[in-house]
Picture (cartoon, rainbow, N blue to C red):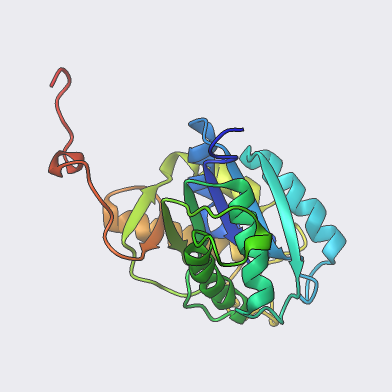
Length: 239
């Protein structure tokens, strides 16, 4: 058995959250040959728009366009998600089974309580997954190399941004797989701006901060290591 069943595990509260938050980054990863698995914590069954069955079909279509290796759903309660022992055991089990090098999870600050709860349980699961005597029934201890967070609805100050300029059209097409959710301005949404417009505006904003056409922001707990300061340089060819 390989040490890693996948390279990157992307944790999301609902189907479509991963695509909106880091769809361009996932496209970049899969284009480069990385093995990516999306783990949705809930089916989004309490949402005003769509049904669980519709959203599952949309999530499957989006996953195919992203080129991810697998997509699974933990089926925890939508709109009732808590950072509790049940959620912790489910996420730790997924981490220990998939053994990713990198865990991507929602930022812990967001207007949506499920997003915040997912971020919090991800942080705890990252720690507990590496403890041999914690949740032994959830599999053999294993901890990813790093966890980083992608924002949802609210602004966060990023630790770093990923250039997704070449993936903007493909990211939009992936998000459009969620026809039940991409309905333009909706009075039931906390943020009433059109979903596609909001996603594109955010990507352009963070791209503008870095000199890119578009970028996705991420937050790291603690500093990111560099293999020398030269990692920040563009070296001439032949050097």
